[in-house]
Length: 516
Image (tube, rainbow, N blue to C red):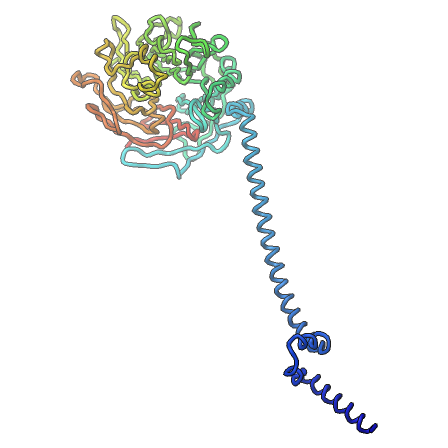
């Protein structure tokens, strides 16, 4: 019996050992999978551990891959987040700065630091066509930001003295090119001239440009309006605050010197338009004129606008909305013409002794007028009774009903005993300076709104030329005219040595234009 028991035990042990070595194959056929899992986990753990090691190894690989990807994703996310925060912070910081500072303050820092204005040729902006070849000099640093009427930097005017280009900004920074104009290659640098202009117009007046309803980026109402140099004398026009919040356009003069210029008032008056208290209840210092042109050693011509005080244009005893001839030595003056809205350009033809005047109309109706001298009475050009434009908003606007009763803007000048313009533009081009070219009867007028030059021919001695001549879409009725698009607002223009020099106020750049 004992032997039998021992045999049975040995048989069972042998059976179990055999199955143990061969993964319990026989028992697997007899039991369910749950028990099979149990055996693998708790009885045959040595086999399971081998599989587990392999699985763990694979899992570690996957874990390392996921960890690496996670780190990459986290790094990329953090970079993007930080960049976004930085951009947002920069944007918020810039916005905060612009809330606290006006453009004139940047210009004033340039002026106080006596910084140079540096420009360099911009090949990407320069261009040529069948009419002109243009080199654009863009600002490198110390960009002028105080603009007269646009939301981009910044306004200025140009002149020539001793073959040097002279620049004055709307904020009163006066500077000269340190290279003569024929020697300008790639760089155009201006060195500042010290002046006392801020005695007449400065931060106090520039700050008042912002009390109107426009956003501060829309430009400044009160500014320098023009520069003109004759022999050793320099003339600068500006919007003058005659008394608190009451303004006109006045004229300074001084002896030119590259180190220091002391200006004095050459021409002004006590007449002014009040910012708030005026007859028509409107005020706009953009309509201030200010163009200067020397006629000879004794006399110069000076334009004034209406500041939107329209009734003054038809008052002979008012100095607003006029072309005025001023004796530079006695300060005596006489009114040469009247009935102008906002004269932005003057060109004096010495050979035939006449004046061409370029004038902003209202909504439509920019004009080029012929002004002849030695008249028995003051020639009248009709504003604000006649105009080929309309009051802003038009005749159907309810707020214009009373305005049209007082200022009807008739679509004829001659029928109401006014002088017709030689040319008018409808729609308006935002007309600016006008100059004569070397070729007889050839002229060019610049524009701001249309960002173009208009080359035209006008023969003063041809009495058969009908007036007015409407220009629409770059074409005129009886005048040969050619539009050349520049692509920026042209605030000022001079003609020298067969070239045009333009001040482009959208980017505060300067253009040199060869006429083919």
